[in-house]
Length: 157
Image 1 (cartoon, rainbow, N blue to C red):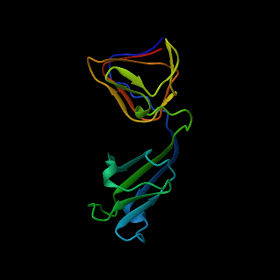
Image 2: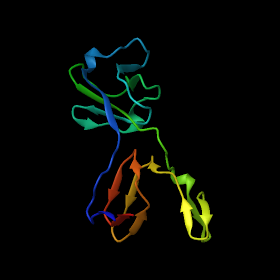
Image 3: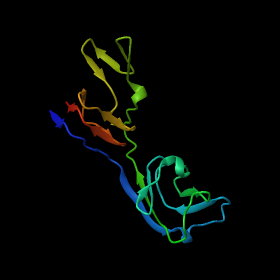
């Protein structure tokens, strides 16, 4: 039985596909109102840093897998360093939190094979946190395409 201990751990199966360093001066400003930087990524799987500080997703637009747009209303200087890391994610067997649910004590979203056996997909795509004092288990093997933070106890069986 696999086990992830009782301290915070991050598990992430994303793969870096592009890593670009720019200065603001190097941005494409032909897209009115934006500093545009070019990088390859899977939408939703991107890290953007300005002067070493991570930007929140709400601070930029990145939805096409090809560029990142930071509004020119953001206070940036021409010499500021902009680092962008684009990731790709395995597209196999994704288990979304919405796929499996427990409502009023009834498990939904699983295929019941017989009275004792349930099947579910093998990949989890949203950030998951197991808080301190909480216990959880996952039937594996399982792939995480987002971040897993474990402060409590997680057993992978």
